[in-house]
Length: 176
Ligand code: S3P
Picture 1: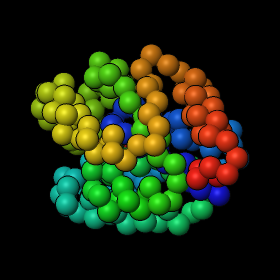
Picture 2 (picture 1 turned 90 degrees about the horizontal axis):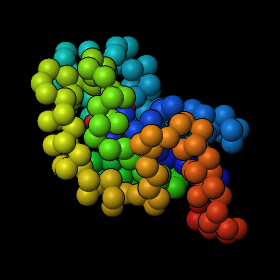
Picture 3 (picture 1 turned 60 degrees about the horizontal axis):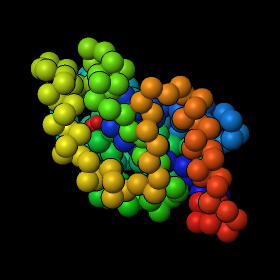
């Protein structure tokens, strides 16, 4: 059974949607940020502050590799994971790639003042969201099999759309 990978920008609901989707489908749920925190023994902001983003990206690549070994899992990856082509290739080989999107206002409302997101903290979050979205758009689009907009929608609505889209590909498709 192939994995279902949720990827896309911060604040698009990957972890929450992934957890509920996995529950509904009776599959395991793996969150790469949670694996990183477990391995490092400290929070994502602490890794960025004490060890730097490069170290975080190394841990992230290891977490992606580990997550893809869990066959058939629902996998949520951090917003920067598929920017690395090696991560994107590994995830694509493991399962269907679901790109979750949201408009900038929704993202900003969801991340709040972003203490948990070092790439948005310490400056103007709107500027950072706009810049990073523009920088990453091509990587997200290239990695995606399907795209689901989450703006102004509940977790259950998004979960239902993913289930319809993934299940709607018919028997014998590459996602089963
Ligand atoms: C990041 C997104 C975060 C986390 C880290 C870096 C990014 O995950 O991995 O702060 O580069 O976009 P979420 O997308 O789950 O917030």
